[in-house]
Image (cartoon, one colour):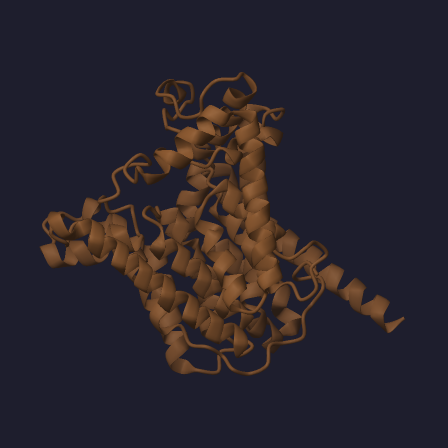
Amino acid sequence: MEARIARDRARVFTIRGGVLLALLAAPLLILHVGSADLDVYRHGASVLLHGQSLYAPSFATGNRGHLPFTYPPFASIAALPLLPLPEGLTAVLWATATILMLFWCVRVSFQRLLDREPSRADWIVAILTAAFLVTRPVYDHLADGQVDIFLMTLCLADTLAARPRWPRGLLVGLATAIKLVPGIFIPYLWVTGRRKAAAFAAAVFVACEAIAAFADLGDSHRYWTHLLFDTERPGRTAGYKNQSLRGILLRVLAPQGRPILLAAAAAVIVVLGLSRARRATSSGDAVAGATLAGLTGVLASPVSWIHATVWIIPALGALVGGLHNRVRNIVAVVIAAVLFASLPYLPNLVHGLPRAAVVLLQRSFGLICLLLVVSLPVLRAPPPRADPNVAPI
């Protein structure tokens, strides 16, 4: 009887939080929803069905944004369910699903804070989620119809669920097959002792790409032997929108030393990030561990556009914990202010800034990711009891 009452209360919590979020998020959902990148996925699925090439120059002329298909071939298969939906409706439905996924990520990431105020937890999650919608990473995400929050949700669900109802590693493998950056979670699962899950995630990834190769062997061969290594194909990686470690360093290093130094820097950040993620997880701070892995992926990728830095949001949850440390709270407020202020865009609006200020502002989101990977505090207290209505188990 008590268990049923607890489940009913948790259900009411979720419904109330969802209703509050809907009321708070509705204006943004109505006024600011785009689909440039979503159109690329949809067009990729259409091209696949018609037996054309995903990576031909003609692909960009066939979608409204005139953008190339820069993802692994399986991403076009994953987008097939989007094709039957009306074009205009797809963007709204995807934005709605994205906001709900962010709602879940916030609830999981800020669980220690919610444990302090259980009676106000639904309000806290709804208000935080609505506020994060106007941070620059999420704002750009919704404006472009991107998939990073979807991939973040898959990775958090797979790594944080205490007893997943699916084989652990399945969601990480699927996320990696759609966009390679979540592949950082395969070694993360391995170094945290979940080696069967890591092997299964790798197997799922390989199986997905094998399916794509069966659908179009030529495109798969072209991607894995050539296009994968063309780091400039997604766009100008030295531009300010690339917040990866490569983007931070590209215009600083001497041209003749770039390849070796950039590769070395990426290797160092992977080793450091996974080491700290392993330490956090083994100390009982699973949210910090998964977040460190996600931030490491953002930095190590050759290209991480501003919307990819949404991993800073769960990092804020790991940072504030239960609000027990004033210094961490202040740092979290400063980081959040940077996200709201859209600092990488500021030099475009304010001209005549000193060169050093421009460099710092344009790289600010990537530098925050780097700062968090290096110094995100690990809360060593035992994690709170898992709520079955928060994370899938």
